[in-house]
Image 1 (cartoon, rainbow, N blue to C red):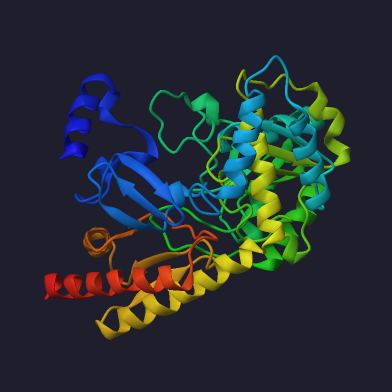
Image 2: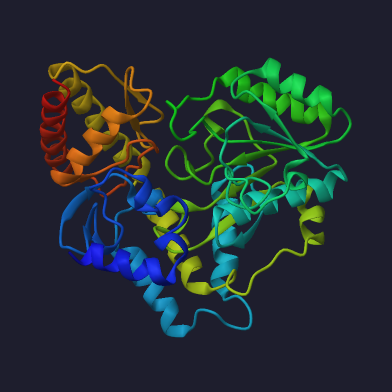
Length: 404
């Protein structure tokens, strides 16, 4: 098996053989570590097994793998140059597109990863306010830098000393957190909905979103939306725009360029001067190919109403899984937006049922995850979802037989 051979070789030259959230060693036994290619809503591992992909490379692939319009834009830019002595004209074009599309955006700055963007956003907030403290929901994931990584290995307590936690969707908890550091709050950073791993997802309560906006205003702090995971899958204008809540700063990445590495911070005019004072940069942050891919991705989502396509496919998947689970005698919870779904089994505290079921789904050509939210893409057609549901139905049957 090619995957096993690659794992053995990697173990000799890579710490642990693999690291981070793509480390298949922490998944169910059947999960492949190495992949050969992707096309549309499908991926093939190095052993030639084909999967209908409901992880979309953990979020970046929003239009489907190797989308023609995106690949053409990237190839056209690559033919001219990618990593040059300065950015290409496409940087200005992409920033103009974001400012035109996003009501809370008067400017944009670019980087490579979601962690870059959340960190940069907090730097802008601190530069603007001259304050240090940041209010953050307990258990929320905002990236992998020392200030926000979920693992303390290699970090010091001081690197998290300026974070003050609150309970998501509890305005009372948020107010109490602010009161403990009154006068020193630089920012409130919050995800558009609660998408902590290992837990059922929780949509934001509109009153909480509006209350967070009002509290930031009262404190003179920046409201930062971490739209890295949800951006461009809920609303192209920003995930809290449907609630009438506009942030001061937004962090974007994942789905922004259909798999090409890019991230962005957008912000309001009031924070433009503070953003100008930052020294925040990287030698690869201004490479033009990813910017061309981002422009093509966002324009395609806009022109083809990609979010509506994902909503249709996500609804079909959710309804199908519910009917199957019921038929096989399972009580399941399906949480989060239909474009960013997740399924958990009632009473499955140790995830043993989810692990068995997701492993069975793999055997039947459906790639999803037992403890992290999934992602829909605009490439998931009605036929693709129907085919996937054939596999999940067999997986439910096998799980029922396994449990007895």
